[in-house]
Image 1: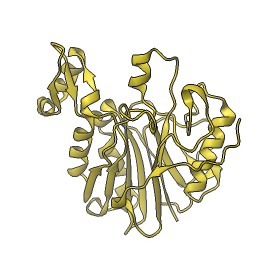
Image 2 (image 1 turned 30 degrees about the vertical axis):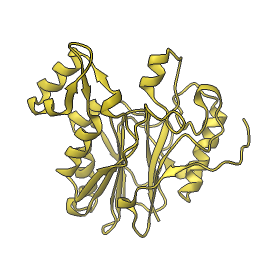
Image 3 (image 1 turned 90 degrees about the vertical axis):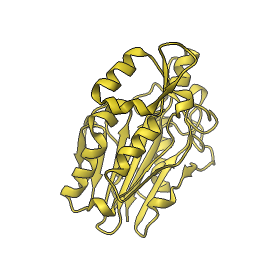
Length: 260
């Protein structure tokens, strides 16, 4: 593991900026991992050297002004499951795709590498959330369940600010007929998120548009930071880019939030 002096480079989203709320959509810049994981790989489930991943997570925690042990993430399974916590879970990471808390000093985060990381904050009632929303999670209700879980511990939907971080864009997200059939079977209105592809029987899926639309029906404010993970290799890991190249594994960036 190299020491490295570079600091992590989070994208701070102004719509969440509020007194007592610290957050960041972290890029891959400012970490110690090497090779295909170069940079700030925070994926415990990756095959990167564990010491590098732990150092990267320590740097993220420092940016959020919490000790490393107070940065909570989960074992993500592309579900609609949400965990409400008052402290960082001990032992094995619990499975799910979103976390909510009202406890100051507990940072909650989700990992991504094309899927949509969404951070939520109700600064007035001091409740925060973080959700991992790929197309499976988004269409099965992870965003709605996150808002419900926040409301259960004191948030009000009209006061919740939500922002989607770096996500694969429609331009780079081609899907096949099986995906299209499953998406339209869930709701025929999902057709508006599909655009023609150059390949017959395929389409380009607007995951950010779909997520933000759902958020706008749930929260007081919602928007996307606008960065495509696939297009910007310098700043972001991308599962799809790795797949297209036939690489054996990929890094994960983190998006995290904390009350102070």
